[in-house]
Length: 200
Image (cartoon, rainbow, N blue to C red):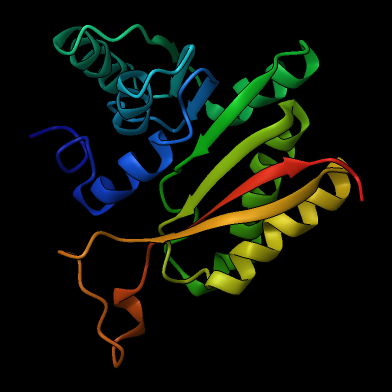
């Protein structure tokens, strides 16, 4: 009654498994984790290490309980993801798979510019700590931010981070959240996965 949806976001169900197929043997960082949908899937898929970052203490408590239910070893951090990524970069933290699944950064068309700056910042911070061969899986759930603008925020961040990326997947919402072509608002969830590759 006091959480967000079910805590596992049913529109992301198919994507939990899709992202987790890259998790085996990797150090995973799941930002904006809520109750741990991606973190739990990655832990079950054989990740070497999983850190889940979530600002809500209540969601973290539920995430820890979820971890215990499946006997998953996940390090939970009750922290603002922007701050955590900044500290991680400054502290030399490394990751092989980073998942970014933030809540909507804007509920109005007027604030799209601010939202895109926010997306670019989390992409830049993440790319700075991703190792060669590492994977960034990133999502946007605001229908005001178009797919091309969201993708541009990743491209701009990669230039600033001096990281070459290869797109390896794109994502949308689960089939039980249908997209109606005459109603653009129904196609609200978009996502991409990129691999960090050596300079050409």
